Length: 166
Image (cartoon, rainbow, N blue to C red; front, side):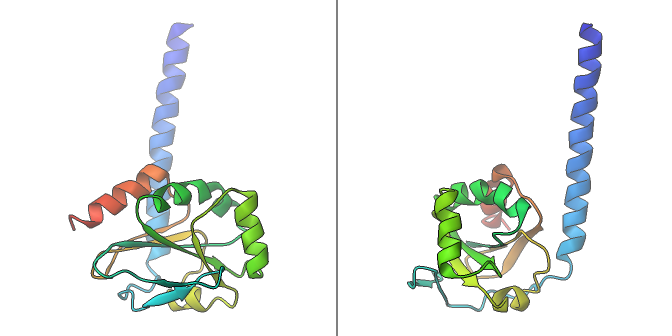
């Protein structure tokens, strides 16, 4: 019995590791079409009608998501966690009015900064076609990492840390 448990545990580890590799390969290919230009936006208008100025000399994570996206909902707590330690701006794409987005945030206990991209202006600018998509820019606003699809909290933190070394 103990040998069977050990065998299944090893198989599960191999499966998870293989799945992670496959997901990273898929994300890499999905990210090939993204706009790789530097972040030239100086500010965003948030859903609470305040202006968010992009800070100078600080790395920033820009996260594209939608209220109708199941993967985005699953990933939202990861974005919430990293927003407590780093500059994070999220862009809710074609997710309805400011009020609907705020209700979604309240219902899911999310407090990160949100831009309402009701007409997909920002998602078109960055050539975002799938959600969620996360872009990480260094302190010079050069794109260093992009992730299309789900990203874990550990993955987000490790990328933010690596930005300083690249």
